[in-house]
Structures are given as structure tokens and as C-alpha cells.
Image 1: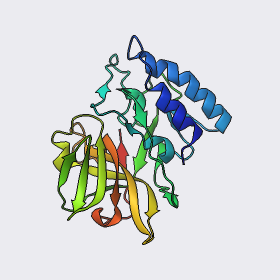
Image 2: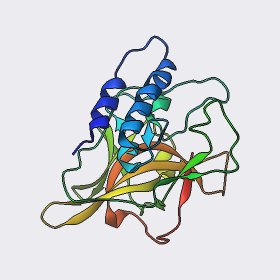
Image 3: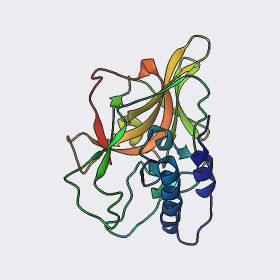
Amino acid sequence: MHAPFQSLFADYSDLDLTYKTDGAVAIDSLARALAKAFNTNVRYGIFQHLPQRSLVWQRSQGIPMERVSFAAGQALPSWSWMAYHGQIEYPDTRYSVYWDTSVQFVEDKESNASNNPENDGYVLKARVRRLRDCEIKPEGLRHVIRDEKDEVGHLCFDSQPGKALTEVWCAIMVKETRGKDGKWQYYVLLVTECAMHPGCAKFKRVGMGWIQQRFILFDYEDDTAQIV
């Protein structure tokens, strides 16, 4: 079931603006008005209350999305759809879902003040896990993980995946039961370690997808990492 704002954001992301940087400015006012109506805060198009629901966006077109070039010091985080040019969509969760409570915005006292103080000073944290050894193959417009003939994972990279195919981790957003057997599948952000922060448990988003539970390693249940 889609939240009302998801359809609105999906439609807005398809607008053909003269300057690609105008999108972030224009949607910010709308997002703040919605946040006021929802009695919550919003950061870069992501609502602080139940952020998982607005974080699980993915590209809807068959071509890779283009990262918008902002002026120095104004770049948006990788998990915000406002940082990209291209239409987005959200998964339609129809079954029993459980939102992962580790996903949250927390105050980052080390961050510097920016031109947008209402959004600055917070970072996104989530449980980040490795995948079990598996082969990710391109099929049509997406990438899939197969167990023999069965599809057990469906991955949508924001841009050309490149080496992300071999270095991808997943940040847990929500789990959902599927089918009569009640098997769990997880909706995740696809992330890779930040080259600028090696060994510091900081990651950047490179896509979104769903994966069956048995292909995710849950060795350290309570560990979280920053996604920048």
C-alpha cells in the first residue's frame, strides 16, 4: 500500500525542469508543508516519522539516474531522491510488513553548519549487513539473485553499478511476509562503503531492492552504521 506522499513525489520527480538543481528547491517547500500536516520533520525529502517508508524509493525508468551537480557545499546525501535527476517509484507492499526500528535520523554533533540549518546536523543510521555468497545477474532493466530457477532477490541500482556489484551491502528498511509459506523478504537500501571514510562504518546508497532473508547475514543484530 502506497502512502499519499509517495505518489506525489513520484509524479513530481518526472517533471522536466529547465535547471536540474531547481527540483530540490521546489520540492523542499512542498515537503515542509506535508511535514507540518504530518506533525513531523523532513530532511531532503525524507520524513523523520517512519523514515523507512520514504527511503525505499527506486528509479522507475530503464535508464540510470543522473546525480545532480550542486554547488560546492550544497550536495545532498546519497539516500535522498532529490539528489538525482529521473523519475522514481516506490514498492507496493501488500502483505504483513514490519518496519525496522533501527532506521533513524540522529544528531551529528560533529557536522558543520550549512546553508540549510533545519536539515543539517543529522545523519541517517540503519542496520547494514553483508549478503551471503551469491551471483548478481543483470536481467532486463534490473539485477536479480537466483537460487537455481527461483528469483530470491531483485536489485535496482540508481546508476550503473560498476564495482558495486561485488562490494554491495544492504541497509535493512522493512521485512515482509510473502506467499502461503510465510517466508520473509527484506526491502533494503543497496549501499557501498565510502572511499572517503574507510573503516569508519560509513556507507553511501547505490540503489534499492528486496532480498529473501536467508541471503542476508545477520551476525551482529544490533550494529548500525551511518549512511551519508
